[in-house]
Image (cartoon, rainbow, N blue to C red; front, side, top):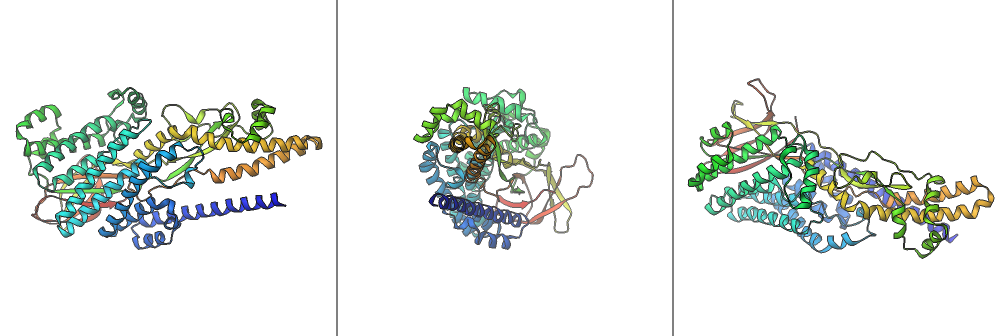
Length: 552
């Protein structure tokens, strides 16, 4: 009776945990949909009553979601509070607790504290800087501009720390948005030393595009081959070969944008170096034309769509390698009696435990193909978090219209960052680092369940093979359902993070304008456009304007 009551309590706990997790996922899906549709009041109400707000282990995620929502509502004070909270939590979690978690064998990610992936921790800094700058546009208080600038410096420090601590080394060691947006924030101060910092940030961005940029499909049509070479080069402390870097039109648009910024700033603050930079960069004709025009005074940043969802994808793990990790004295004694081969044979032949998901998720290209390990022996399947494939970005242009709707200017929009691809890269690298640890932990739980099933089978063999086999299967299936419920992949993620950041810099006379986007046309044909917002240009100097939009 006691044993039966324990099983009922255990199963009840699993049902409650599963129901809470399902409810939370449904709420966050509804929140994301409302936010994406621009229904911000509805999104705020969903978030206010959500399970996320009640979960102390998801405090970082709650601050990230509340921060993006507050900023979208024009509440810069609230956004600054939430993102500063998020960065404070990142400092605490990343420096003090993440190393302890990495050493733990027992902790399941979905039941642990949400630490955020490296790209999520990174973009908390972008949004905090943006919030400070957005408030500066309203208040014109230099303290807010200093807050935006100071956050850029903290963002750079975050990556410096990541580079020192990342093991194994990651391709995502810095970010183009940090360099390019950070440079623009430094420029608007109109201080010469800040412009010198901005110039160096643009040069850094060009180097990132030339090296790390090849890992992303948006910039390189052979990115998968390039990543394989990059992984090898990282281990050798070298840069990858450029043979697998076939630049896309988006890569050329971004390179032109960075070339323009380097040359324009060099001519302004280091005129004696200008001819040397021209020879070194060999800019395109459109870059030279733009440099000859008045310098830019309007920067437009476009945040496109929403990052793809994080989902649990199945991986196989062989049981043989996990047997030695069993710590239960009784289970170890039983395994020693029957032998590991007999145990795995029982798992395959009686319980039907054969490999599944042989094809593996996505384009897993790192280090070794974890999805195929152990597929010829008794194996369990478990989940790890992966990102869904990003919708392919289109090439867009910006259109500047007067109040009557007449097009005054149009230029290609540079894609500074494709966050879906960054997330995919980071999470696939993460799979390599955690595959063995997570697989071993889950496999040990299954081995204990197999031991229990085998003991039941041995005790009932006298009643016939069918009854013994059915009882063993029932014992194992019940336990495996419990394991699956407790070992779900942690799919919590910053769901309102944009899929991509785009940018353009223009020179506009003082006045009121409409800002629109349209597909990048190859000729003079009429294009369908979408108004994304309005700007007012004053004579007070350079300004950054940010808009959200969903792809056409």
